[in-house]
Length: 255
Image (cartoon, rainbow, N blue to C red):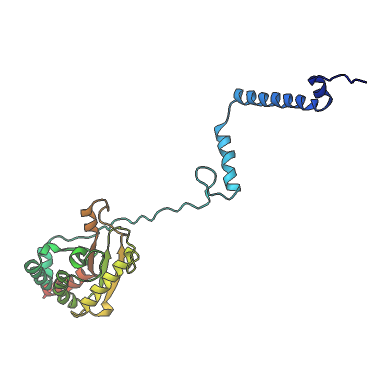
């Protein structure tokens, strides 16, 4: 008996014909959703919030959206040094202190008076000098010029009966060496060298203290080479110097 041959349509209908219907249905659903999305308005804020939740939930560091994993820390801003009381009249200071007058004369003859800036701040006598005059670049060893300068200042400072504070400042150059891991260590090392040198000229150790400020209190922005050089400085502050010299002078005038 000869069997009749089946056409392609009959074979599909008899075996897996249902897959054709399912495929047509899925295509229609996909087309429907595409048309629905294209015709609707999207809320960008909602979408951004929704997508930004995925990195946080997976433990991924947030870059552009969502809540920050690290709390915001405000940078430390240290205001520049402000002078509350400054006496620029050197003639008045010379009259108050003959010893200071002799020191200024010696500085003018040997190293130049402009090398040491003098001011009275909050009744403290402040002697400011550039660190580049005392030390080499990124170094805490005294230059010959620095030794000569401290040799002039030492006898005067040794005769003053007030506490001395050695303040050392640097620029904000990102210092990181084996000896000096940062600017504060460099400032402390330079201050220690100056303190030991002044002790050789009779300044008692119990009168000395050190303040290594490093780059924290710039006088000028560290944006130009000359500004950086201005910020690299050392200040010897004689605490309460002005009242200490004014009282004896007032007593002499009464007599």
